[in-house]
Amino acid sequence: MTSQSQGIQQLLQAEKRAKDKLEEAKKRKGKRLKQAKEEATAEIDHYRLQREKEFRNKETSVMGSQGNLSAKIEEQTTESIQNLTSSYHKNMESMMKKLLSTICDISPEIHPNFRPAV
Image (cartoon, rainbow, N blue to C red; front, side):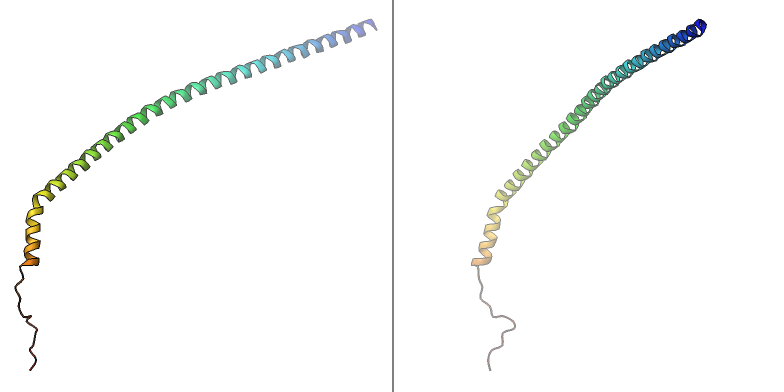
């Protein structure tokens, strides 16, 4: 019977060691998962910051060119307004003379379709 109880004791000890090893393996696995999650989070944050930086650079380059375009459009508009104003001042007097001559210089004539009453 003693050999049998020794065998049982050995089995119980072996089971306890296996259980301890299993617990230890679970703890190591949990630590590795936690560490992997932290590394992945850090890598994601780094990637996000890098992409945001690239986006900001592209945004400033595009917005900067849009600023240049708006300045060019503003300059063209100002130039066009100046051209129209100078053309107006240059041609205003001659047009006023033409209008006044057309309105004021009337030569009365009988209309060609007019038929005197018989």
